[in-house]
Length: 168
Image 1 (cartoon, rainbow, N blue to C red):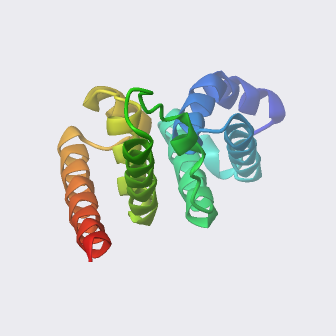
Image 2 (cartoon, rainbow, N blue to C red; image 1 turned 45 degrees about the vertical axis):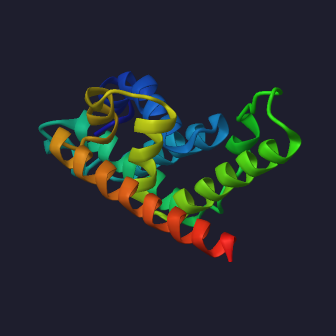
């Protein structure tokens, strides 16, 4: 596969790949890096890709795997917790307690397996419908429901354990 054929096949997917990477990583620079790394990997495998029936699906899968690998290596990011606004009408003690609870939920979420963490963020934090999550992750609706259920159960159990330990 020469450069012109490669460009004609894979470059039209650039925007879609970027959107998917951004949903996974929630960071513009990291998303751009993952898309670039995906294109590099595709270029390196260009001779093997000539017989692909669905090059878009292959590119998306390659990108998702790169993003998941990146997330496995990433450290927990509590920066999203700074975006949470606690109403000013609450007393200082209540505000502090709420912030501690939210921070602990974030810590618990960062302990989830990568796939559960990704799906629960898309579903709960980003408030995306299952159909959109399906498009972004390639998972079936039933799988998404199971993953969300397991993640919620894990979060609930770990949060209740933390609350119990806090009261001691």
